[in-house]
Length: 131
Image (cartoon, rainbow, N blue to C red; front, side, top):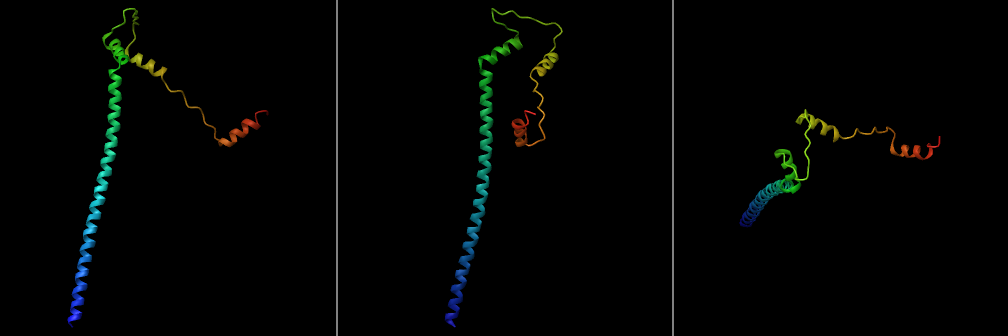
């Protein structure tokens, strides 16, 4: 009876140790997953901020460039170079200038796409051009 009790005690101790090991490893696994998720989110945020920083640096470089400063001096302050002549057009408003610029820089209309597949277009180009 003493051997049976000792075996039961030994089995119980091993069972408790096994449960404790499973619980602690499971807890560490969940903690590790949470930390990995947090690190991933931090990396994504860092990448977004780095991209935003690069854009802002480019804007600062653009605004500090002599060409931009010259354009702004002409536009806002009405300055000109000593050898330039300024022409003023009466009746020209900011709105009409913006409309003219919008027309000038308008994107060209999209070319109509053919409904036939590309292989058919090539076939027609090479073999049906003489007809």
